[in-house]
Every structure is written in C-alpha cells, then in structure tokens.
Image (cartoon, rainbow, N blue to C red; front, side, top):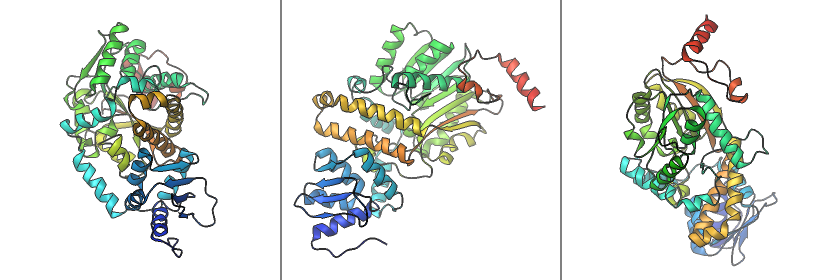
Length: 420
C-alpha cells in the first residue's frame, strides 16, 4: 500500500509519487525551493536535489528516463554515494511494476532500435565508435570492454582481463591448428590472445569501424596477420567452416527475436562436430532493458534471461556443457572502470562535454549497482554439437592452468571408456 500522507502542495504530491514509483527507497527527495519528502521510519542514505518543476514532472512521468536525463543535464544533483543510492533504488524498484508509459516507451524503442542489419550498424556505431582515445582512458591496456575474471580480488584489471581470455580459451580447450570464428570481436584482444597463445587461426567479425582498424593495426604490429583476420562485417555474414565459435559481449546486441537465426548461423559454421562459448550480460527473468541506457548509451541492447538465451541452441540440438555466472567479477571490473573513468574526468569533459561525462558516469555507476544487487548477471555458456565429445571430464583443468590438450582421438577414447 503506497504511503500517502497529507500534502501541503502539488510539489509534495509529485515528490511522493516519484518516491512511490521507485519503491520508497531510503532517499530524500528535495525540490530546490525547499519542498521535500522522505520515506517514513528510515534514515536516508542520500539526497536527490531536483532543480525545477519541469524536472520534477519528468521524474513523475518516468522515474528512470527522468532521472537519467536530469542527472546528465545537471538538473538533478546527488548528495551521497551514487552507487550506493542506485543499489537501494534497484532493490526497492524490484518490487514495483513498470507503469503503462514505461512499457509503451520500451515497445517504441524495440521498434526504433531493431537489430536488423541496418539497425545494428547504427546501434553499434552509436556506442563503439565514440573514438578509441576515449576508451583508452579507462579500459585496460589490452582494450577489453567485457567482464574480466579475477583469480583473486587483489588482481589488477590488466591481470584479470588476461586471465579472462585464458579462462575462455581453457573452457574451449583450444588445440593448435583449429579454426575459430569470433563474432563481435571488440578491439581484437581475445582473437589475438587465442592465436598467440593457443596456436589457432581466427576470423573475427565486427561492424565497428574504429575497433576493426585498431585490431588490424595490433595484428600487424604483432606479426599475426597470417593467423588472425579482422573482418568489418555483420555476424550474419560469417561463412565457411570452423571448429570453434566464440562470442563475448555480443549476444546483448543480437536481440531476442534473432536468437533462432543466431543459432542457425552457429550451426552453419561449426555443424554437429563443433563447439563454442557465449559470454553475455543476462537476467534472472525476462525484463526490458534500461530505457535510459537504450536511449543514451546502448541502443538496441537486451540482456536475456538464461532460458531465453537457450533458444540459440535448442533448434539444432546443441548440448549445453557448462554454465557459469561471473556476476561479482563484472562488479569488480566495473569498480576498476569507474575509478579510472573518474580519474580521467577532465580529459573526458575536454573531449566531449560535462553532460557526456555525467551520462557515462551514471551508466558505469548504474551498471556496477546492477551487478552488486543481482538485477543483472554475467553468464558464460559452453556448448557443443551433437557429434562433439565434451572437451572436459571435470572442471579441474580450468583452474589448474592451461595443460597441453590431448589429441582428439585419445580424448574421445578416454571419454568413451569413462562412460562404459
């Protein structure tokens, strides 16, 4: 039952409506003329100071977009720890149903930001082609823009990103001479790592022009152009036959309506005998992606529930061999990114402007809060075709380092004997 006190002004009524809309999180809401509301019987952990009635009305209509736009514009100021306040809002909003207006906005975004071949190019360009110099300010030295893997909480971001690339390679049990298709390769770090350290050849596909140019330069500098080819093209156009398919941080951009099509593509390139790994942001249950993030940061994004993602595999009878949730590792990754971003805030403002700085701060802080509270997850799913023998008997090799993989025939014989 919403808390409905007697109101002394229309402003108080709007503030209370906003507070109820975010689940009565322990936060004080203050209009600049001094009108305020606070949830009863709690000690507020911070204050949102709202500049004017126009911002107040936008918050009342859609708290999510209203807050994102107001904070970015500087019309909403946060007095307190931004991440902690967002954590409390996420926890409280989990108990609140989205309003009709919010649902309508989400459906409109679905239509406008559809991940068709043309739409995907626009969506990816909006986020990833902001300029490599911007991302260099706060990513690790390898330019890896996905969840790291921390063997210990004390590991540096650089160590954790290399550990993640090794971890994926071990999960796939890559063997020298194998061919790997990498869909959505970012700035190319994983493709280069697999070729350099595991002796495979890689064709890596991406529609971000900035990222592909950077990756090609790195391949040339390292003398790996004969083993890694970076192709500026949509994943839907991957052709040829491969032993392994890997996609890290791209399923979020495929769109749930295209999962069966994505599975068709994977089957076309690895068949019944291949294997692969998908690494993606997900949820515990189906839900719309953040409307504000889709508006300003990541158009076309969708984080699937695990059962939704399985639609990629079911049509072609792919076996799911291993599922792992690295949610806390992504929270740790985002802590590093946010700290580095704040340290580079002057350069970011100089490159763009104060509004851009605040929007990206909110995006990183909100993402961190999402992983800390469990409203978002990070899944790694290893899968294989119906004729591919599972590459691991136990998970021990994943943690013991990277032993030399056994020849396929010997490994198959051991597996068959173990099952007899």
